[in-house]
Image (cartoon, rainbow, N blue to C red):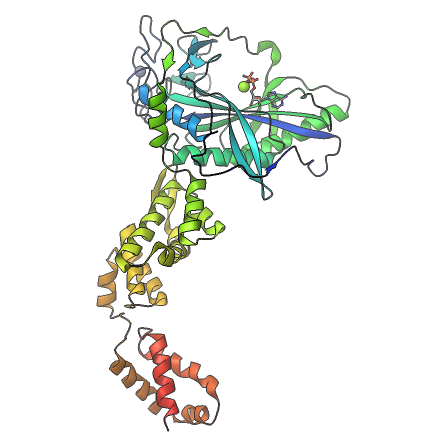
Length: 508
Ligand code: ADP
Ligand code: MG
Ligand code: ZN
């Protein structure tokens, strides 16, 4: 088994905990995720895949399904799919086959979708999720490559009309099919979030649920506790929000339980989640279901990916979040929680790492010494200014500027408190930290003479406190430190202030 994740087998949770309030049945869930691959062009033609272009602009005879047009596979897309397979530790097939999935629908101009059936690109794999602090391994049945359908727009302009936008038709997708190993809506959500993270980190998918580039079908059944055989399932179609998936699954489990308890039977059917009505609704039954008459597409030869190429793709793969977390914990002493927060988004992870390594280089200190400080600052000060949309993230200031700021804390120019103030100004004005420190005279006063002058002034100005201190009320030292810091606008080195005060107060 490949071990490049840096993870050895852990103790796995097996089976299902029976959810509260449900004694007679246990839920079984399998997920099918369609993820759009980040290829510039479509799967079988050169049309761009950009989202949001005017309708039908990104089309050609191939993706419009015009007679005589021939598909040419997109190497980049297939290689992205191989990387997805590697990240989920699938067996990658050196030879896979594109097949026609035949059905009629206005968004499918050829009358068939090019997909994979008997010989998919990626075979068995798995994804480990955390459930109540334990690790549970969810089997991946397969990951195949297919083209997306176009988009029907119902009721645009006039409610009697359906328009078709072919821009999306032919966009490269992977379909990731899980084994029926999930037992609750929480597990399903954990699986989906982790899957999305992985695909985003390796650059295969932009994780943009709103734009539909990561969509999920949930298959749900229940069975009497202890029964081996699976119950009849329903399929909840195309849900593009984690929250809705969770709600839809919960509702569906309760609905099925109600049906069985009242002596009814579950009908195998496709259902959809209605957010408005807060329930799942039947879309179509088994009668109309699935006779796709798959057969190998005669226009396309088998997809061959050489072993050496698979090895290259494996080597070129960006580090996965779980490996980053472990590395940061080991190299910088980050806590598991902090490492988790900082690795939640690929752009944030890259940013944090740049702050930490630049800070180490500038301050001449080790990552072990400064990494945790960089992590704390990024978490406490920076993250609230960061907005993300899919893979994109916008940061208020450059990582190198944050490193520069923190380096001036390391070399004693300013203290941590002033650093926060300088950072706020950096965000507001876009100025470099050095400039802000200079302009506002924020340099920590480490000049003994200057500190001593200020301390003498404060001692002279507070004769009664001095007397009390000298007659034993030592706690007043805090008061004096406060006065000096106030007088220097927080710029004095507090340790030096403290020492100087004690020295001068103690000399009678
Ligand atoms: P199809 O292609 O018709 O949707 P598959 O057999 O490929 O059917 O299964 C699709 C998904 O349904 C998989 O994720 C699988 O784990 C899940 N699944 C199959 N049977 C059940 C069941 N009885 N209960 C819950 N999930 C199931
Ligand atoms: Mg299905
Ligand atoms: Zn095209």
